[in-house]
Each structure stands twice: as C-alpha cells, then as structure tokens.
Length: 150
Image (cartoon, rainbow, N blue to C red):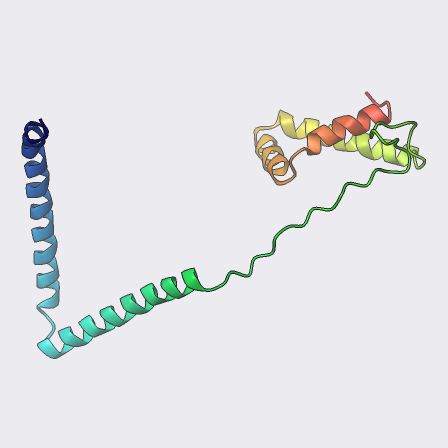
C-alpha cells in the first residue's frame, strides 16, 4: 500500500523537482555571469570574505544561544489592602482623602476616554493605551463606583 501511495505522489514530486532545478540553474547562471568580470584572485578573495562573514554570523548565533541569559524575573509581592478596606477587600467607607479634586480628575479622565472612543484615530490610541495598561478601564469604572460618580 505504501508503494502505491508513493507512486501516486511521484509525478507531482517530479514536477516540483524539475521546476526547482530550473530555478537553481537560472540562479547559478546569473551568479556565474556576475562573477565573470572578476579575475580568479578576486573571486577567491570574495569567497573567503563571504565564508568569513557567514561563519562569524553563525558563530555569534551559537555563542548567544549557549551563553547565560541575564533576564530579570518579575517578583510579585503580596497585595496590600488600603486602610479603608476590610479583610475581604470590600470598601467599608469612602477613602479618607476623598475630595473634589480627585473626583474632578476621575471625571476628566472619563471624558477624555469617551472623546477618544468617538474619533477613529483616538480609538487606535485608546486601544494601544488599553494594551499597555490592561484593566485601566475597569479600574476607572471601579473608582467611579467608589466615589459615586456614575
């Protein structure tokens, strides 16, 4: 059965190889035509430079792949609840620093994000901002609920 399956793929594989062979021959003929203007000494020099550059690039890749990586691992600390929250995390009362300036800042931020949603260029900016700071809009909604703005 395997031989029959292999025979069914043989014509397609043969066409692919013939096509690839033709492309390789064209490429080789083009390189040969391009290098004809150089004498043998210059051709050897160019080949040596090409081999040196290629080997050094691959050597650098190998060296970097086996060298120790100096990446910092993010350390997450325990979440500290604010003084106005109970153990469950639910707010027991409004924050002590509740003032008109804080509420005005929240309202300005909400108006700004709403105006960004309205324009096409602003929507792109808001999307990139949301990707950079995930959860920012949820935090804004939560602050509005805490301060009874909505």
